[in-house]
Image: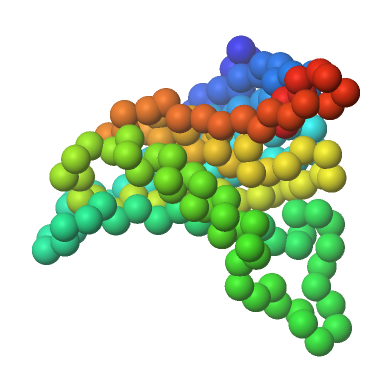
Length: 172
């Protein structure tokens, strides 16, 4: 574990581990300091920022848990800027919606019964290479951010992609 001081004297924690043959780096306390907890997760050239926030009070008059998971995948993360007629990026891609649902379905049962505070988990893809997919990094980041935050969460939570190539198990 490495620890570094940021400019405003708050501690930034960086954790590194090997995930298969690749190095996984998790940085806590560097970005999005107004969130209950925010982490960056990086593997190779792919990096995601995951921020978890919670409202201060419960929402009255509802009988469900108001959880919002949002995955933001923009073209700038892979180095492309939209041009010509379509200059704006429209709605979320199908993979972003599926990744949001994958995280939501995994973390929703890990909150206490009767919990009615608004909780928002936002996964922003900051950079992406063609080798490491941001979906697994978003899942890991969501679990880490919620576990380290003051949000009541009965985690931990994580995910991994496992495949078999030429008879050998490969991670991500």
